[in-house]
Image 1 (tube, helix red, strand yellow):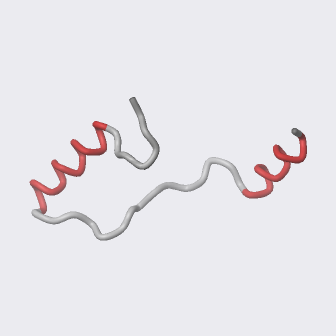
Image 2: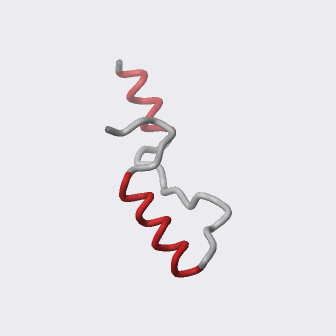
Length: 48
C-alpha cells in the first residue's frame, strides 16, 4: 500500500543498493520533470 510521504519498496531497494556501492547517498532528491505544464494545469482547472 502506497502512503504519501513514504518511499516505495523499490525505492528503498534502489537506495540500499546505491548505498552499498558508494557507501553514501546523494544529498538531494533528483525528482523528474513535471508531466503537465502550469498552463495545462490551469486549463484543466478552468475546464472543470
